[in-house]
Image 1 (tube, one colour):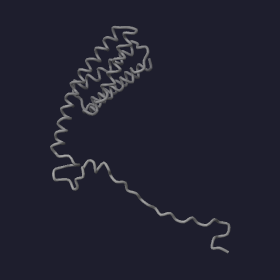
Image 2 (cartoon, one colour; image 1 turned 90 degrees about the vertical axis):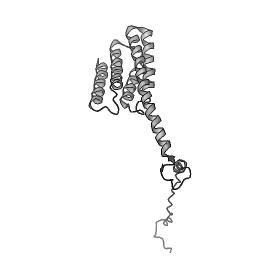
Image 3 (cartoon, rainbow, N blue to C red; image 1 turned 180 degrees about the horizontal axis):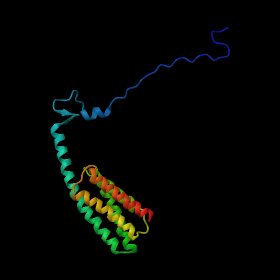
Image 4 (cartoon, rainbow, N blue to C red; image 1 turned 90 degrees about the horizontal axis):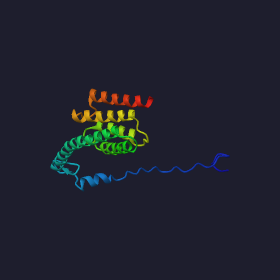
Length: 181
């Protein structure tokens, strides 16, 4: 008789556990083969290069605010066009508003204006698939434009603190009011 217990299959051999630690390819690319890094360098980039990049980002942020104000002027012009028009004229103006809102939402957070991104995203969603634009819907579009204008004119960055939260709440109420009407 064998050593196996009667009626039970033989035990499987124990598999060896192997742990694989993949090579960090990103680290190798960033440090460009420098190990250890020379003094004054972080991640393979010189302090001068990092400072230059930060300065360019700050300059781009200043240009963003100017571009966003110009873009807001376009939004308001198309809002006025939609308000004065009817039918196809109104529809085309709202399509332009939707397109501009889509463009505006893309960079706000990158340059310190997440509220612009939030309001423009909301405006885009509100206008992207509408066939009939009522006067009430136009008021909600105007509320979005007004919220963006306050953020840009008051230079409200980050979440905007109390003012930012009040703007978010007011816009949400305007949207909710339309949805129940």
